[in-house]
Figure 1 (cartoon, rainbow, N blue to C red):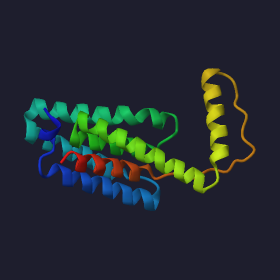
Figure 2: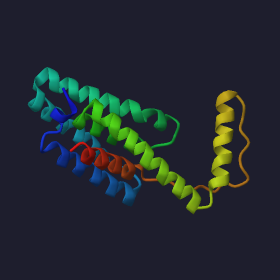
Figure 3: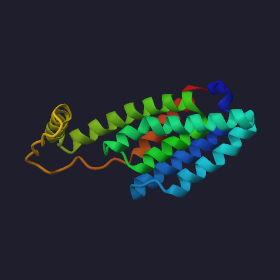
Length: 177
């Protein structure tokens, strides 16, 4: 199954609607609702089956879902993302398949990283952030050590990462056409 076969004329608009809805809700409420992500998973399965037959469609759905899950899960486990972000990327994978969700994840990481850097510099938290990252790396290299906390407890803020996922998805969908 190729990435082009996955992108039938109606799949792109459906995924765009899903990620834009998630981004809008994430911006407003700082969370992505389960009804949206779980609903997207449930609807994607019969669509994949209709497009590729039972074995091919179920496989495409499962592999895309697992890839979306696996590529974002480590960041969730490190508390760098919320569960809704993981569930949204799995929904994108369920709809678009493994190859496309990997490209979307890469684009999302670049967009999200640039956005985070801009946010850090705008809020004046660059020094404190570098300090925290240095101590996190120190703690990772020397397990059991307790990193020293920076003088400031201020934060650069939270980021509605659903927006970055939507931007990465849009970029890759439009780049693939």
